Length: 382
Ligand code: BMA
Image (cartoon, rainbow, N blue to C red; front, side, top):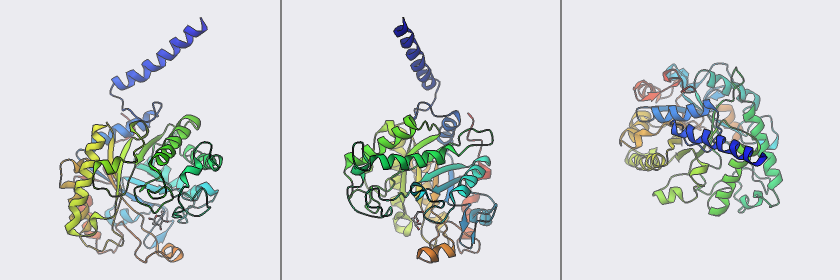
């Protein structure tokens, strides 16, 4: 009797999830994704054919000439509106630090995430985490680090405690009604390159996939986070096979991304991005997933018409490529930060007031195709 009751219960549960899909619900990594998370995915899919959301890393924390000024963003200073997508960076969270590796306070970051979400924006998180075996930073190329965090290996428990810090941070991201804020989580990115400890020369294909799956299963099944969409984002690639070589599987990825800092360096290579984005869109759509340009930019934006003549041209040139949902450019490191970190003095990728590219950014932002935050429909209800 008890067994049959259990079976009935199990059947009812599976009928629920099956009917969610029959009703047109997206097939996400997480069957229990919150309604707002599902809505975000579906609405981005709906918008992607006709529009491009514009995103900026660290947009509210600092700009080329300022740090931590309430309400400020370089994008807003130039174009009168906030970016539609906010990228944030968690590096050093795993070490228990109060600030990330770029000096952004984690409590401030949570506040800015809540603000951006409350205005209707989209949140995405990346994580340049420390090397788990050496104690070095994310750029420590010592091979084999990934193998040490897999189940049964020496750094597994420590690594799960790092994922616990992530779970606590994400659990703290709530809207005014206490509902979890949906987040596009983009771990272990640019793994086809070899500059991070999870990179191609440091990590076998099987270990990379195991790391990814372990992360998803731990956050979703053990930590109970149901507000995440998982974004896979290799560095530049030439073929679909190359892009998919380390892909952890359709059951573990919601969004297919592309990080591309190469193609938009010169006029003559813009078509490389068009070609790659076309492939990403086709691979994503064939799997019922979303495609994004997860990171791009040209340091210092040295070309006055970079926004329209490189970025927009690359995306609009092809009917497949133009169906990417968003493009996010990297951070506008402020002068003080650039100095403290010994970064190049032009370590910015977005527009900024007074920049020679500012007029062109306004032209870019004013097209019907490009959406800033104020142009967004409600992305969180269906
Ligand atoms: C890199 C650079 C670094 C920064 C890191 C994480 O691309 O911008 O200065 O520390 O991203 O944000």
